[in-house]
Structure formats: C-alpha cells, structure tokens
Amino acid sequence: MKIKTNKYIIFFSSLVVIFLFAYSFMYFPDGYVGTTKKDGVNLGCVCHGGNPTVGVSVFFTGPDSVALGQTVVYKIKVARGPAIKGGFNAASQFGAINIIPGDTTIRKQDGELTHTFAKPFTNDTVSWSFNYTAPNTAMIDTLFATGNSTNNDNSTDNDQWNWSANRNVRVFSPIGIISISTIANDFSISQNFPNPFNPVTQINFSVAKTSEIKIKIYDILGNIVNEPVNQIISAGEYRLDFNGANLSSGSYFYSLIADGKTISTKKMLIIK
Image (cartoon, rainbow, N blue to C red; front, side, top):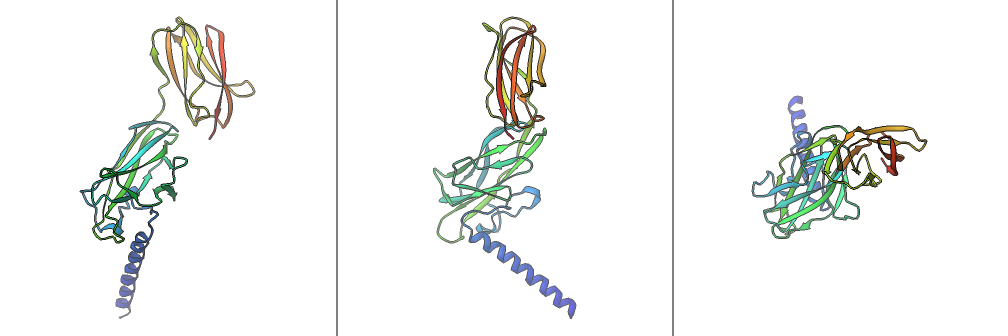
C-alpha cells in the first residue's frame, strides 16, 4: 500500500509541476526562455498548443560564416499560422547573443533571447534582429529558435508554434591578406575598421611596386607583439583581416614597412 501511495504522490507531483510550467508560459506575455531544441530539451511553446505546427515557419537569416570573435546581425522570423501577433525564444550553443542597443522589443534571460511583448505580424511575418558574437575558437556553432503565431484573442485556443531548423554557423579564423586590386599609385596603410574592435579588424594597405612588405603591431611600450605580414607582395591594394584574440585590451600601434622603410604608423584599440 505504501508503494502505491508513493506512486500516486509522484504522479500528482509531476502533474502539478507540468501545470505550473504551462501556467507560467501562459501568463508571461513578456516572453520565456528554455523552449528551443538547445541541449535536446525540445520543450517548445507548450502554452500555445501541445505540438509544433508545420504551418508555422520559424527561421534565421544572416551570414553562414563568421570570423572568430566577430559580431554580426541575425534576424529570427516567424511566418504564417494565425499571424496576428507572435513571440520567440532564441539560443546559441557556444556564441553570445545579445540585444542590439536601443531595441526594446527583446530581452535577455539566462543567456537566451525572447520578446518583451507580443509583436504584430506584417504581411504574414514578424521578425526580431539581434547581435551574435562568434566564439574565439574555430568551430561549427548552432543557433536555435522557437516561435509562436497567435490569434491574439486573450486565450491560447487556436494559437500555433514551431521550432526553427537548427542553424549552423561556421566560425573561422580570418585568412589574412586578400587582394583587392592589382593597381596602386603609392605605399599607404589605412585606419583599421572597426576601431575599437574585438578581436577581428580590417586594415587596407597599398603597395606601389613589388616589395618586401611587413606590417608590425606594437604595444604602447614599442614592443612588437605581432607581425601579421612579412613577405614579398606585388603591386596592388590589399586587405588584412587581423585577429587580435591573443592580445589584451588596450591601445596598440601598427606600421607598414616597405623594403625596410616605415611608410606610416597608426593607432588602434582593442576592447574585450
């Protein structure tokens, strides 16, 4: 008899937990997290129906590849279904996802993003944009999302939801020097962009004729901390994708040196 009693207690306790969890979803119009397929949870928007609906499309738009530590903008979209108002939950396996400064339609909780209020659909689609910052290790990262499409009738009846397909993001180490043009009138080096940066920035430079080219990075004491370019380069315009992941936050200087002569020196700032 004691064993049966324990089974009943466990059963009803589980029902209470499930009810409270579903209740919490129903009465949190300012969003909820932990509903995506991240870590195999597969919970979904349970307050908007027990099962996902294939008629609702949830998907990401944004770059397929992101450099180490680079921050880019992605968009999560929800389409079709009742399509009156919608909400979402987005998560990243390894990278950081953050609110774009000034955006009040999204909030962050437990490292994930969700809506702050149900957002109206426009032309059968609703969307939210956010910042994604890639890890500092080359890998395949994954973005996850869940979105709902509601009829906004102050109940959960006939609301629908679905998961997005897992969105893979290739996180890569910048390849170094990229040729832009085979023509250049002089030797020069541009101000890096972005600046400040973390940890990847671009530096454009020009080579007037085939020369031994060096680009050296110095700390504020004048010590060489990196030499991303040291080779014979033909005339032309080039772009250097410089990765400062191994450098500490602070001010640095970089110089273009052609055949042993320093052409120009500029300042850059890393903020981590």
